[in-house]
Length: 307
Image (cartoon, rainbow, N blue to C red; front, side, top):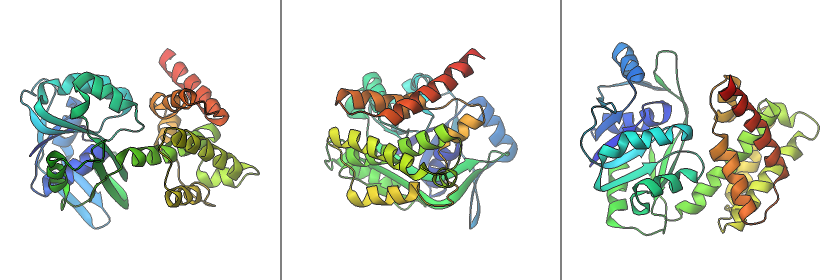
């Protein structure tokens, strides 16, 4: 199987890098700036056990001229339109697309462009970042890639993807209920993003204030109600674990959206918060706290564009 990884940042670089190190056929589609950075400093993954150096196969948008069996999309949601244009030459009749973006909106966008049957349900869980030298730093043992057919079937193509990912140095898992699991991840991301962006602080900062824990729990209840109304009620055990994670005293946890916001970078408010509100409205679920988060992030995004 020939894999094209779109992006070599913390997420795509990590999973693609592990696959390449394990001997899989992996090519990275990246921007010239990242190409130059890798040329200077190498392609390096750093984990608690040490460094892994990789000699990656690299393509840029102007050199991509052949189709691949599988495309791993690991760009930020606001970069998706440009990325779809870039990968168009790589999409053949049998190419499958496995996106690991946040939310659900990107599945609709990719399906409209390339066809719904080409888009595999998928997400990842990883805590990683790029350092000042462009090295990929794995910050916790969590490194899971989850995938599955939207209808829960086990077609030969998903079995082949599963075999390709297994044994490559990260946790690869074939899900038979990928739709519910995608909503579960959204429950966590939306609650964490809305809470830390609105309050401009960590989970620990928020729960230390009077009413802070109740505020986070209200956000969690709102998004859970939306998921449930769409027929994707989170597993009770997952929901309780998420509640404990989001209300842990002293927790330094923040959302990546918050970290981007305080750096003055673009944020994924359209995909994580605004799309959630649209799906809530479609099933008649009231989400007042998420409306506040949407206004807050919308003002930030508009101001950033104007400046």
